[in-house]
Length: 177
Image (cartoon, rainbow, N blue to C red; front, side, top):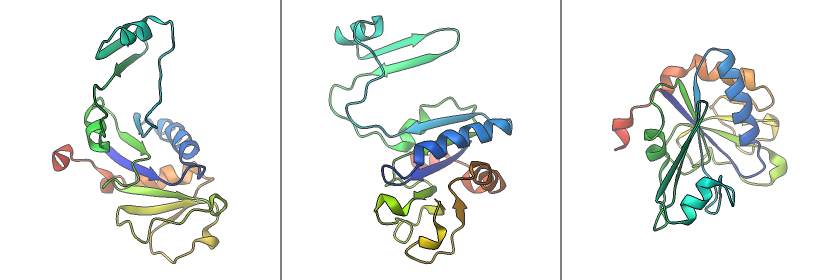
């Protein structure tokens, strides 16, 4: 499995790029999973539904499954800070690519997503794990870089760059135990 992260500040276009890359990689016949960093209060369950009622009754885990999907809802008794690596290990092993959105402090190889209008600084000068920058304004990058600069508005080109460099993103889960 190959793993690549996408780091950038809110509003930079990470989710849109990841969404478009899923489609571009799927068109190449590849199976894709996503690991997404969420804010602490997120919920995928709905009040009144069976799974919500089981969780509210105190279940540590609730697994809901059908012929088309499966979801595991786990409620931690104490707040947990799971690493990207712990979440990757929880995925089905038969995927070709894992796109990790968020986890900007992780030691995963990542593409920085940067838009000048967001008004936030770039990360690539200080983050050795940033291997490329995806932007819609390459001429406005505040610091020169020898890293590839990818067109944020051309997900097919970003997907091509990833697949052309796929050996670089081969993931060894044993390296992060």
